[in-house]
Length: 255
Image (tube, rainbow, N blue to C red; front, side, top):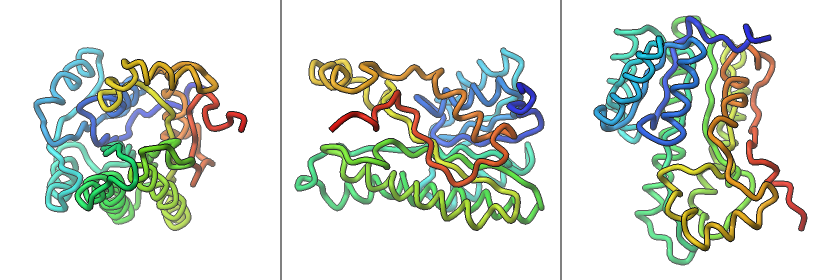
């Protein structure tokens, strides 16, 4: 069974890999044999993770990528193909939040969140898919959504909307791309501590929130490993178009 999770020979691209989930995902894919390209706007923030992967015997490359810039996306894919080959495993992870009550949101907040969390997911996945189809290669795309794309949350109208759209985009991509051997799924994490939310969960309000959800704790990053590998590898060869929550049962709490 472990052979099904083997990613040897795969070329993986992880966006938003400079911290948090993206950094963790890159390490997990490398540990299972993939040659991993870590992408973020600031390459210098990727070098520590690249060094850690290489010191553990893995293969890694850092590339500059601003997912909200079309030219940057094109340049990054050209660089990756020139140095590694065609990306056949994409983890569309880059994301931002602008947590505010709906009536306080501004046009700039909408552009900030939607451009990164939705438009960039579409554009990076489209570029990856076009290159896979042109090369006649199968592949897998994992779009990182959220449980907030499946249920609403106070103060997260823009983030929730962007992630819900990612879920629907994932399903449409899965429908159209499976004929080319490309599987597309969404991973929907619950609450895991990252740079984006650490201040909140260190507060009294954050502690009270955790106490009120079914698992009564945050997830450990290692608890995302199996779900990620299932969607990315041949272990999930017949899994396509799903939005997989990994939340300790947060979504199934009683009314």
